Image (tube, rainbow, N blue to C red; front, top):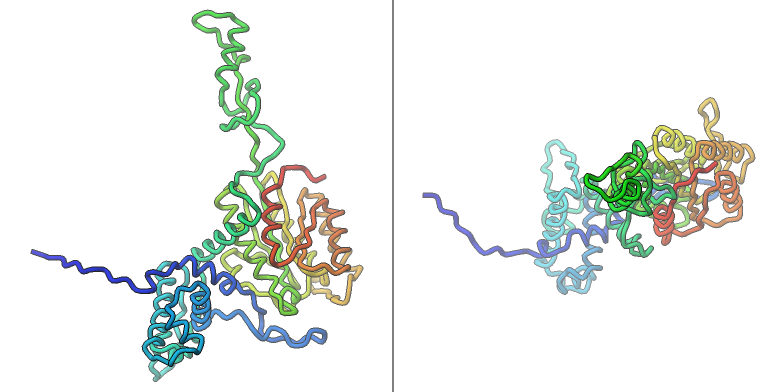
Length: 430
């Protein structure tokens, strides 16, 4: 006979930690933008881009340590050791190293990250990443990279959305309201006569009243086609949205990362659309020297670069993506901090002029704005700067496209975008 022996479960510190709370605290680190391509020299700005987007296992452990310290989840002995106030206790250091290893393993086991295998050097023994004390495994940990999974990206989008909606005071969400009425399930207005093609959501009292008025009280009741009355409900529309993100040099210049908040907005919008507006679509387009569509799964690792601002190319690609979708509403949400400084020539070359508002660049950009308006595409612009030339450009875009402009900061960008998205109404832009 087979016997099973059960013993008392003894939990560890890592089991008591709230993993999702830690991920929330790590959002800025996990979505950090950095500067693509390494260091670059510019005659005006000097050397930039020294610090890239570090996705090494060692960087993840350092970020976990900071998150643990902020959350107050470590023991007093561990905190003292990390602050340099401890006695150099080897046992405490070992506990910290094991805690970090266990947290990384738990993140991987629960599907939030994947780890790349360390390079195998011929004739050399490869230690386990992070094994032993904190400093002993650092070099090996730097040779292992982690990647966010779709589950982690979706979770970060959910948490960002929750924070943004709590800041805007929204407690419940629904489909996009429109001024039009249809015959749906949820009654929103007085009933009307049934017409061919309507949802047969009968208003029974109104139908019987019409039949009795016409034929009097008798059995059986004489019910005619003209007696049928149906409830009306608000018509719910679907919307196609392109989020147009500026990845030019200035988005991470002067010591301020303006691109990471834009990433958070994209992930939050994606989660909102998928869970609350299933008929909507969201596409993400980045524009620097050129424009390109990127999958949401790659957004977390997207970086800015030594690029100019080819707004015209971004609008052109966004318009093409929107016209390919049969939706009641089409809109572009453009997040940028700079005036247009580049266009794509007919032969494919890039014409650049960062010194000011070049008439040639402006003419091509406004031509694309006008094409969006003719196609019924609304352009809402969210500006992360306030210089006079940029204000002048945005004002002209709003005038042509009949859209809106919001001058905001990295702290309030998400709230502004969410407020605008949630209060949209169906209307034709002619």
